[in-house]
Image 1 (cartoon, helix red, strand yellow):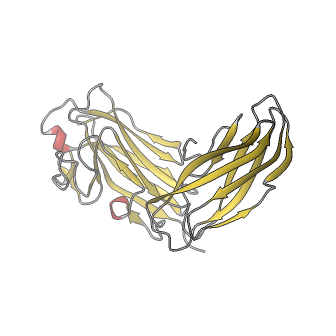
Image 2 (cartoon, rainbow, N blue to C red):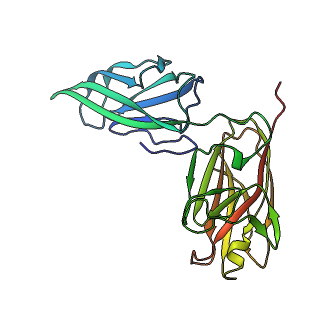
Image 3 (cartoon, rainbow, N blue to C red):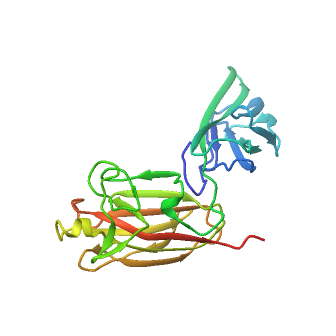
Length: 276
């Protein structure tokens, strides 16, 4: 099983393949599908698919899960509606397992495929700085992602105030290439705004830092910066995030070396749509 924010997977030609979304919001139903493929040269009988979920989760089949016979090269595809409990803890991966069984000419066959979904933090209910939200995941090329300071050195909490060209910002995220930070918006967002650039922390040490920033909404590119350097200053970001479930901020190296690639998102902020 492969994972993707777009929730797309190939159908199995032989054995069992499970298709799951990346996120499972507590208390909200989502759809899971599985396929059992007969890749042999002889027919199977009594084919069936079943889904196992964590304790306390509800699973309801929404399509047929059995077939009397599967011809060579044919497959059985089944779907379920799965609902995690409302109190499921956030930022936790959960395993789902699909089991496919059938009777082959040589005897019973059984195939399993497992996938993982993550219960994300709650979506924001009011305009918020990203540094005040819990992220889904955070990858950083030098030390941890910092909240409201520059990336600093390799330890947590050692950054300086976020700054571009001597102008400081009280809010934001300090990162270093390669960096990938994801937040759950749950479709509640309206716009995401920020300034992104090489932080003065790097500029004071060297002029060679160069990065490129990309903003993704559910793996769709919403913004790509020019090459960011200390001399060029930060790039403004202002993108529409209506309907976006997962907002992802990526910073990649742009000069074939990651030295002095300290980059800051300031003051990274998401506004939310008015609640009906």
